Amino acid sequence: MRGVRITLFDERLALLSSDAGRAEVEDLLAAAKASVTQMLDDHRPVVEALRDALLARNELIGAEILEVIRDAHPARSPNPSA
Image (cartoon, rainbow, N blue to C red; front, side):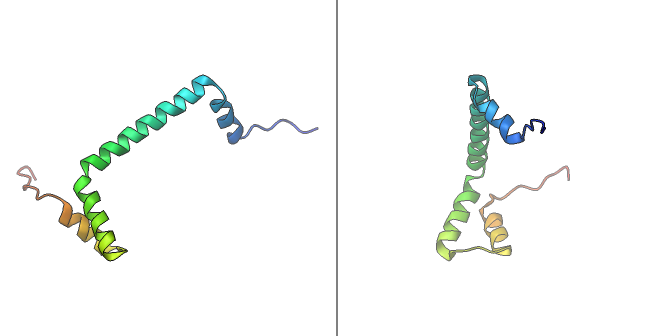
């Protein structure tokens, strides 16, 4: 006779089948969305520069990506403690 095997899928399904589990997942998703939104806002000039370069060139490869990112960063003042 075979034993019952609980898989990770079963555990996840059980989590989502309860109100508390669904609320926990919703909280995790909301926190992840807020984090990603903040990162995109913090780096908006780079995101927009990459978007514009992709629209203009259709693709960016390796050094081209780095060049767009470098050009999009605002000038940084030298660090006096370095």
